[in-house]
Image 1 (cartoon, one colour):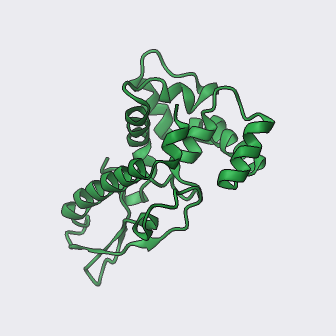
Image 2: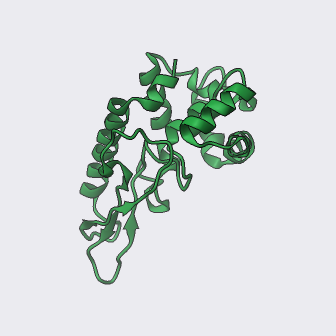
Image 3: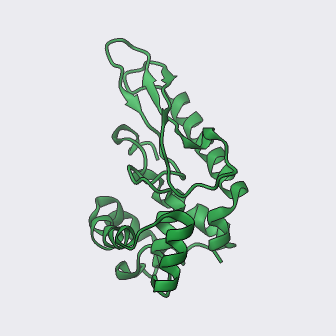
Amino acid sequence: MYQTLLADARFHALLLDIDADIAAVCRSARCPCGGALHVARFQRKPRGRPHRLDENYNQRFSFCCASRDCRRRATPPSLRFLGRKVYLATIVTLISALRDGVTTARLRQLSATLGIDRRTVARWRAWWLSTFTATPFWQSAVAAFMPPPDPSAVPASVLDRFAGDADQRLIAFLRFLAPITGGASMSHAF
């Protein structure tokens, strides 16, 4: 069900549009020092992106304070990038959420299609199950769900809590994760 979203350029273009909207809100809020924010995008080299996307998809929205005394960077949350992870957020989420686990056949297909090694998938699973579930974000956000998601089945158990089609559920999940994807100065904004 979610596999078609990984290769759907229109879905990824929608994520870029959502990121642009979030970035516009960030920029209009100005720097905490009161200074204007100037565009200071930086290039990412995300793995797993559909080839039909233009190079703008690789740019991470970011801003820098115009005040010479401040120059603080403001990197807004993103639905495309999951912090410093190299692969796109959609891939880290959906591959980790595979219900039946990563079989040998699936792993071969993932390696051939996306270049994902089994050890990478194992690191992602460990991150979701230990690092992510130990964060203050998770500790407070999990209270929003009733019944609470099973922490031993994250991210699938959280993804299941959202309504709609596969694309709507994934977007809702990525919006849920947005507060942990921006820079430290942005964590209070969303």
